[in-house]
Image 1: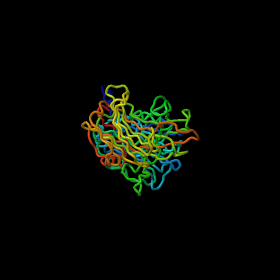
Image 2 (image 1 turned 90 degrees about the vertical axis):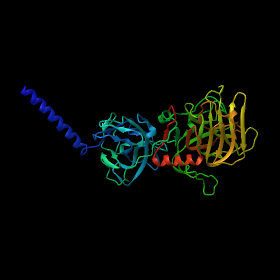
Image 3 (image 1 turned 180 degrees about the vertical axis):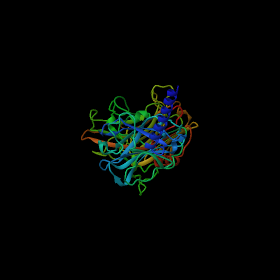
Length: 473
């Protein structure tokens, strides 16, 4: 009996000693532990760090008070982008900002700062966030050399504690080792709680095959069908380059012409190209994977091109933002369209913007209003479908309102596309460029365009790249 008691005492004492040693090796004690693994090799077009936060404080931790920093060395002069691919917390709640060191350190001159919006949730003592899958990439799509990134470890293909990723509570470091260089202090205040019944995206993606697109409910069209030149849709026309419209601040060129006012971040780019033959034609479309829009307000910051980005002018190009029923034969068919035609089309001269509400595509049951407008540059487009009336506005000015007969009767996908009405001439290849800086949809309610612009600016400044709080999402 004495021997048994002694053994128990030794084991208990050893447990206390082990716990004490573990805590002292991770702080005094560490309130949080960060575990890391990588899904990508050292040389890759996309870095894929996965991070896990474990609450080792003995107290409940609000994730809104938590900030992480992942350190890297920027390769070349390209801007970097990032996004969230997967997390049980919901990627809408994950904020991301990239920042530069005032004074570079060894293997680190930039950092990716990860935070969480108010209302994300809490971690109980011993609780874990589970894995947070992130992507970090050059916006020019060139390969990364992660071997010179401080927080990267090619050997960590399964989760391991990493002191090379730092964690902060309320702006105070509680885990990890900061590089020797000078960095701004970590954010102490969380981003605001997400609004309800909203879809927002500022299009921070690595390319048309980014897995985050599927995770966020988007598809890049390829292959068959119309409109325009049948069966010429190609994923190659969709990209996400640097340069937006000024983070949704509604600004245009200083002369009021709407000429491009580039800001930080990325934009969705849709490129159509043709040499005047079907074989040499490629059209581009980007849309939600499932019906999302029914009633409410859809606002997007869109760049229209009046001239080709390369080649000879004269094509009958359509640059479009629209919502549409997935089934064209549906008895409740609905469609709401903007189509900008800088060179006109269907026998009419341009520049021209058509705003159209459809009830039946098979019977051509629609109401439309054509506007002679030159819209080259960035503009804010809005469609508001509330209480039996659908209103189309550009830069806050109402252009057209349709009534209850052509009001949406079922949910529709949200689509953006560039396509050719016809092919008026053959010759050297030419390309046309449409871009979308951000998209905002508030379900079931009227939202002024300026309010949507303010919301987009707020999301951007908080590091919120994507939001989906729509019912059933």
